[in-house]
Image (cartoon, rainbow, N blue to C red; front, side):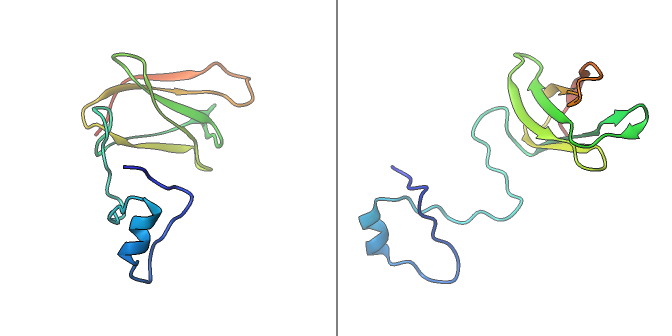
Length: 119
């Protein structure tokens, strides 16, 4: 089944099934907000949260990466918020990971949190 990502139809009207069929697109039911769909063993309802600090102060705009510990596979990448916090969602509960934060100014070495378990 092919998906047409160029056209998005959502909200406020009832689509005509004949037109949808002629476009050869898939109709995907709307997912409830906050619902997580897992497509592999690394994904699920778990989360990893933390914060990045520089000499005791919160540090915003820091690239943070989450890796699966067993095979060093990069799962997610994000940037810390203004308060220095970061969060990785859609990780399998109980999955053991390590998290690496990189100083964007390259004044400090990367910081690693090892054996972090998604909850």
